[in-house]
Image (cartoon, rainbow, N blue to C red; front, top):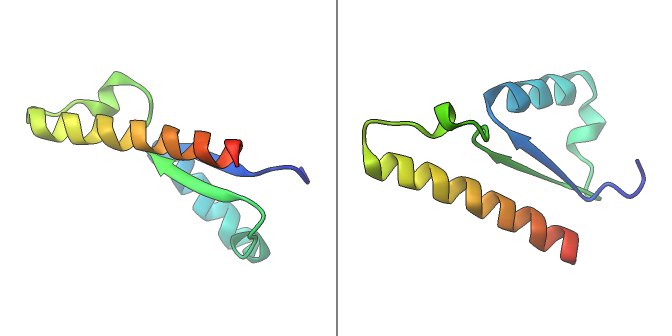
Length: 75
């Protein structure tokens, strides 16, 4: 994928899979032609916490990640 500019990893499974991919293909980690953005899984369960401040922080983190992806794609 020569035009790849960003990889969005949503959730722990996606992030763990990416780490395994980097371990299996170390040259991938050194690539500079795309950026990797990590955030929470989009499901409600990933954002849930009994603490409303934690929930809000998780939601902000996810929104910030999506804005970061949009900025990369617009550049």
